[in-house]
Image 1 (cartoon, rainbow, N blue to C red):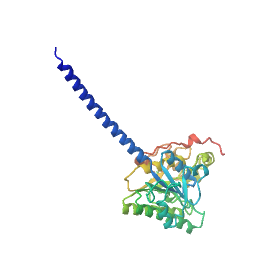
Image 2: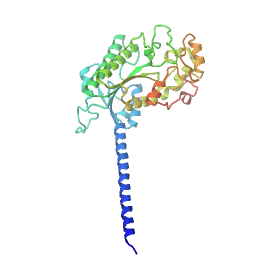
Image 3: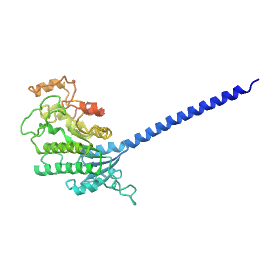
Length: 345
């Protein structure tokens, strides 16, 4: 009786088992490395300017939920419930020296400090500025918005920040604050339309976009300008949409379009995670028109002389978000028809 075969078979089995385990360990190790890399990429140190404002608080809340670390640059503190999570560094963005210092600041006050100083953030999200016309004199709106954007963009680029998200506005298309009744160039309104506003607020946003484009080219960084639609917070749906639905003519100025502030947080998160696009402009709006009527019918009635460049969906928003959906993969989580109860509150 031979005893060699069982031993030989056992050795072969052991070797096969060893090779399988080694292979499995490689797979596991590879998966672990990918997982670590994934979470490292997900968790970023982000400086938000103007985070204490209407949209900023919701955007910060969304980014915190994604695991990011946030430092807020603002002249106004965040609410108390936020202050435990996010430090607000009081900073005048029109002062270039303050901006340089702030962008290389610690993110939290600890005793002692536990993070290296002069470590630039992974990204800067610039929301700060005068929010509309006639809050301050025009010259101050222009000064604050253009100088603040320039200082943030320049300092970020020179300090080595590779991703900047810039809050622009759909007002740049020239209808919202026009002198008199002005129509859009065509429908749907996309990012290729020529922005030619008359008002100082929209002009300041155009200046910021041009500054961003210049620095993105010069420093080979990603700067994405978000042309944000009319921002709607959860508690505002009944009040705003009562007017949107019933006062059709009034809301051409918003292009019968809007963005839920929570979806805006999602848009910012997607923009922060998508790299290597250089300079880009995106309309940041939700999917649907702010009225119960068919989009094409409403546009033909309200803007009879304005061409439609393609067939539009029955509920499609006139200010198109097609690019941000295609390039960043945006899908809206909130629909106004699910949130508006038909009453004015």
